[in-house]
Image (cartoon, rainbow, N blue to C red):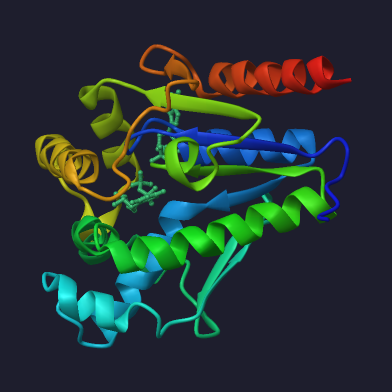
Length: 235
Ligand SMILES: Nc1ncnc2c1ncn2[C@@H]1O[C@H](COP(=O)(O)OP(=O)(O)O)[C@@H](O)[C@H]1O
Ligand SMILES: Nc1ccn([C@@H]2O[C@H](COP(=O)(O)OP(=O)(O)O)[C@@H](O)[C@H]2O)c(=O)n1
C-alpha cells in the first residue's frame, strides 16, 4: 500500500493564460512548504522538442508518433523550478513566441496528453509520499490529472487584464502591442477550451477566484487561507 505523509495536501490550480496561476502557485507552495509543478512548462517543453527536431506541429499524427521520444524532467522546488528536455535546460527556450504559438496544437494531441498526464501524476504521488504535498497548476488538473485533489482553484480574469499582464512581461524584439497580445491569448484560450481531450475547464468542485481586481498578494493570501482551512478540517 502507498504511504502518504499524513499532512500531505494536493492543490490543483487551473485557469486560462495570465490569470496568475504560476505566480500564485509558486508563492503558495513556498509559503506552505509544498512542492510546485508547472504543467504548462511540460507542454511547452515537448513543443520545443518537436520544433527543434523538425516535427510538423500542425500534423497530429507526426506529433503522436514522436511524443514518446523526449525525456522531460521537472524540478519542483517553488523557489527555483526547473525543466530539462533530454538533459538540456529548457527554461529559456520554452518561453519564446514560437513555442507559445504552437503549444496548443501539440497539447491537443491525445498521445501527448496521456504521456504528460502520467508524468504529472507520478510527480504528485511522489510529493504526497515524500513531502508535505504539492501545488500543481495547469488547465485540466482539477478535472482530469488529479480529480481527487484536496483543494481545487479555478482562476479567471478579464481578457483585458490578462493581456495587460502578459504584454508587461514581453521585452525587446518579442514585445507585441496590447491588442496583438490579447488576440493571441484569446485564440490560445479558444483552442485549449475547445479541444476534445481534456480541455481547459473548471471542475465542478473548484473554487473560482476572479483576479481581475485583486492584487497578486491578495490572491496568494486567499489561496493560502483555503489550503490552511482544508488542512485544519482534516485534523
Ligand atoms: N492579481 C494580479 N494582479 C496583477 N498582476 C498579476 C496578478 N497575478 C499575476 N500577475 C502578473 O501577471 C503575469 C502573468 O501571471 P502568471 O502567474 O504567469 O499567469 P498564468 O500562469 O496564469 O499564465 C505575471 O507578470 C504576474 O506577475
Ligand atoms: N495542464 C495543462 C497545462 C498547459 N497546457 C497547454 O500548455 C500551454 C501553455 O501553458 P502555460 O501554463 O505555460 O501558459 P501561460 O498561461 O503561462 O501562457 C497552454 O496554452 C495549453 O495549450 C495544457 O494543455 N494543459
